[in-house]
Structures are given as C-alpha cells and as structure tokens.
Length: 77
Image (tube, rainbow, N blue to C red; front, side):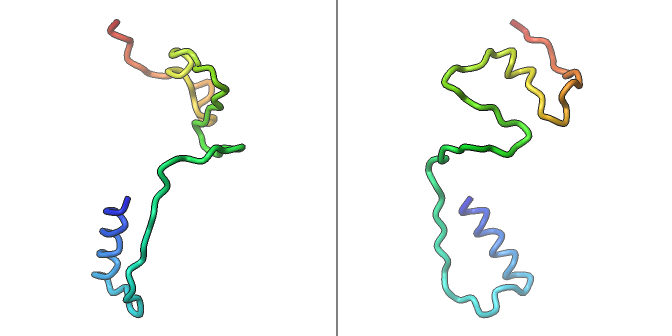
C-alpha cells in the first residue's frame, strides 16, 4: 500500500500537482481488521464460530447472481 501511495503521489506531482505541499505525510496501516457489527459487501458471510461446508462456500453467490447457475470446472478428486 505504501508503494502504491508513493507511486500515485509521484504521478500527481509529474502532472503538476503538489504546489504548496512541501511536508512529508506519514501514513500508517492497521495490522488487524476490527470486528464489525455490519458488513456491506456483495460477498459477506457471517462467521458464527462454525466453518461452513466447502460445497456451500464453492456455490455461494453474491446477491446479484443468486439463482444463476455457476460454471465451475469439476473437481479432479
């Protein structure tokens, strides 16, 4: 992430950005994801302490694909 920000800042400055900003900005990143009460995503599953079956995970569909058959390759096992 830090490298990405560095590259974006470099591109921004090359395109004329940066007037008036001479100080270096310090960015830190979290090392853990905080627990959430609500998750907004198209593929969120609530973990209740019991892992779901592998078939359930393989066949899980986001809301916009619910009811649409999947086109997966058959397992080799």
